[in-house]
Structures are given as structure tokens and as C-alpha cells.
Length: 388
Image 1: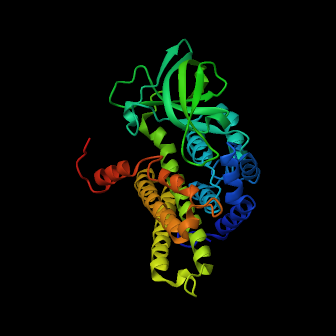
Image 2: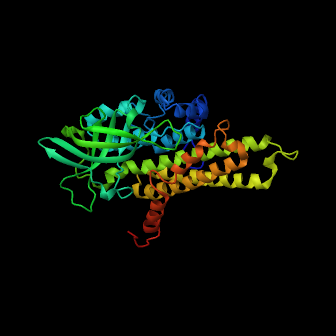
Image 3: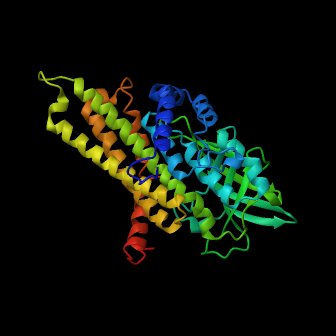
């Protein structure tokens, strides 16, 4: 049976059910307990890896599931909908696994992909810099040759999960690259490499996965640390960034579903004037609108994943950005409405929705801000002149 995008195949439906069943054994209570204790969701990550969920998109010959971004985004969505999203899934298998599978040498694939696929290796992704922000053309992390080695110097910021990673995929530029045209060079840097250090950034988000500032002080790397070409052009980088947007959308869609589920469960039974408050249109209509918006975002996410898996990188870029925008907006509104529907209970620890408020805002900021998506759509979809 072929997927239409609207009706999922029995295999994909079975994958959804399996992921949801596993995640239900952990749920938001486990997730929040770990986060508030400053611990990682290691047990959940290990089980997801063992069951083949983390590497579902990676090639079978390296221990992956041989499927695509559609399946990986499906896993992310169901985990998030169960209140226990794994942020490092966006980074390790979706960005880094994809880039290494497409552009890595046979040796790099053998070294890294099996561990990424089964979750025994986690790889962080380091692109964002303090002075560059969303302008990846202004990256200043520089790689220079020293004999056959590379010397990497620079700083990165808001790098997720460095403390639980065995390696980072670092985006830099070669010394020869002319300023103004980003010619990214991508390097795998094991976290125990001399000259690599990091400091934790204190965040108000309740999450078991942390953010870091990363420092690269003359980090010496062997020639085989370079992934793909040293003059990689932008396509190699965006092979990982389109999946990042699709996974960001999946996480936000799941979060929206989680919030709506919490709210509807509450308003069906909560009574004030002899009738459940969910009967009142002031409660039911906003939640119905939230549900519509989340479902529409999910459709665009599925379209983006389908285009990406079919090899239409340009079409996938437009759809992935639109999906990320729509999912971010929809999930923020759904979480806000869920808190409002619960009233004072929406701000208590007991009901577990207040902690999602700050986390939901992340979907409008990262991995690409809503404003940069609007710039992209204005310029590429509508053909409007650039503003910068």
C-alpha cells in the first residue's frame, strides 16, 4: 500500500502505535522529574535506541531502519505528544546522521552511524555563533591546515546536549574562504579532543537537555575529521538543516497535541455550574481552533518530509520552513489555551502544563526564528526583494 500523505501505510501506523506505547511508559512525570533533578532521560533514550526508533531514518547497512525523515519525524511527534520529547533526536540522527550518511567517507559512516542509530553514540551539532546568530554566512569559526591536520578555532553558542555527546559536528569555514560567501567545512570533533571546552548556559526552560557555549582553542584534528568536501557549498549543510526544520515542526506538533489532550481531559470533567466547562463555547471553540491549527501544521510537516524523502530538496526547503512556522505558532497558542482552560490549575506542578509554557516558545525561536522563515517565504515563495 502506498502512502498518500493523508492515509498512512500500515507500517507507519504500526510505528506510531509502538512509539506511543513505549513513550507512555515514561510520560511527562518521568520527563519533568529528570529535568528538575538536572538529569538526562538516559533510560528513555536507551530504550528508544534499542527499539530502533532513534535510527529509523539511517541506512540499514549501518544499523538504521532504512526509512526516511517521515518516519523519524513521526517518532519525534509521538514522543512529544506523550510529554517526553527527546531534543537530541533533532540533532544526532536527523542532522548529523543525515549529513554523514550522505557525504561522509565509508570509514566515517562505519565509525559513527551504527552508534548514532542505536543511541549508544550521541552527536551534538555546532553551528550557531554569538555574533552570527541566524546569519550563518557570518560564521567565524575557522579551520586552517597544518600539514595533513586541521586546526579549528572559534566559539559556538546554544549548542544542545554537549555534555551527553561523544562528538560534535562543527560547522566552520576554511581559512581560504572569502568573507561574504559561506563555504562551510564540517568537522567531527570528539568531545575529549584537547582544546575543546564548554560552559553551561542557565535557561528558564524545564528540560533534561541542556544548552552550552562551546570554545574551540586551536583544536587539532586529523585529516579524516573533515566530512565531505572542504569547499562543501551550501547544499551539504542544508542536507542537515531541512531535516532539522521538519523535526522542529514534529516536536511542536506533538507538544500542541499534548497540551490539547491535557486541556480536553480536564474540561470534560471540571464542573462549575452543574455542567462540564467543556460544554461552554468560550472553552470549546478555542480548543477546537487549536486542534485545527495543529492538524494543518502536521499536514505541512508530512508534505515536507515526503518531499525530502523523494529527493526534492528545494521543494522540501519551502515546505519544511512553512511547517516549522505553522507548528510553532499552533503549539504556542495551544499551550497558552490549555493553561487558560485549566485556570489556576494550569499553573500548578500537579497538572504539568505550566512547564510547557516556556518550552513552547522555543518552537518560535529555534532552530530558525519565525521572522527568518517569513523572510525566506517572502523572498523564495513570493519573489519579493531581500530586506538584508
